[in-house]
Length: 116
Image 1 (tube, rainbow, N blue to C red):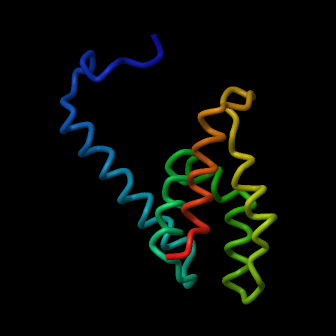
Image 2: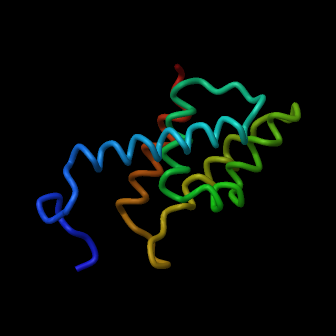
């Protein structure tokens, strides 16, 4: 069995929640440092945090999403269509397109592009 249900876990739900919050806080600090001085809206930061949490910091640094955001820091316009394509391309698990990941990336992209 790859995953255990919460009831089978040897840790409490509270402890697991604490670890999740700690991980998200570390990822958020890391993300803010990597994207300084770019000013993000709260919805954009939340969407990026979800993406970083799910694909990992290393993959995020190699992504077109990161590259386009860094270019925007240097005064270049944000190529929304290219960034969207890069964002939505993170939709595979074990080399296969996953409907769950397709839905997650669409939800993140919608959050990122929603007016604040």
